Length: 238
Image (cartoon, rainbow, N blue to C red; front, side, top):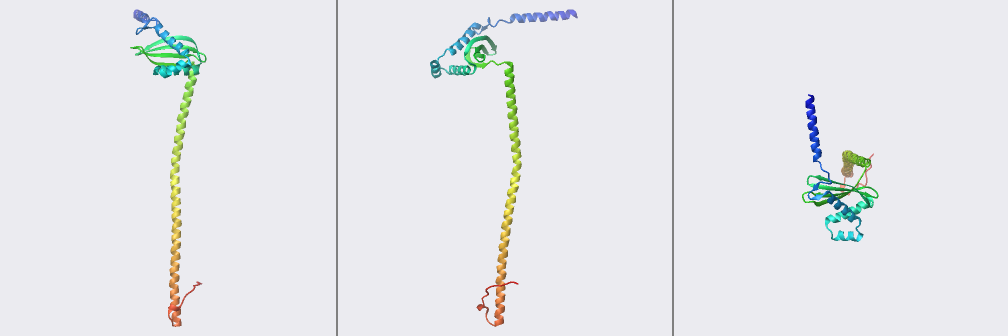
């Protein structure tokens, strides 16, 4: 049993040693025909060129340069405005991931360190993108993440409150419809009462006419004359 454990340990050490031997220093590696120093010099030279560009040069390149150069100058100006002017170079690192090679140069700026990154397409080593991001501490990153979380939660609860208010508003519509229906019904009752009153007045006028005719006929019979010569001025009910 002890021999098996010893053999396994020896094999693990051998594998670890082979792996360590295969690892090469990034400064000695070949990056598709470019050395570590070539990429470092290119990155630092780009930074120095951007640093010493005059306003006239920037205006010229913004007018006559390519889109990639225009974006680089614009991003550099924004970075200088946010992090301050360039002071010195920091660490340089190269990362190869799949079809992409990334050269990262740390820059010491007046206000905050910045990571100047050149992204290349590894198969032809053409520049694809340039990024300039501030270097933040773990505490600052946690603070930013916390603020983003609070903002996200606030937005979610705000939307939920608005949805609840809208649902409550839906309960008002039936009340308004009932109120409108009640108002319409009361209006119909008033109209019905007016019509009934008018009908009563019409019936009363009709009854008075019949009564006048009967009285005129009775008076004419009592006098022995015709009812055409009588005019009833008024009728008093007792």
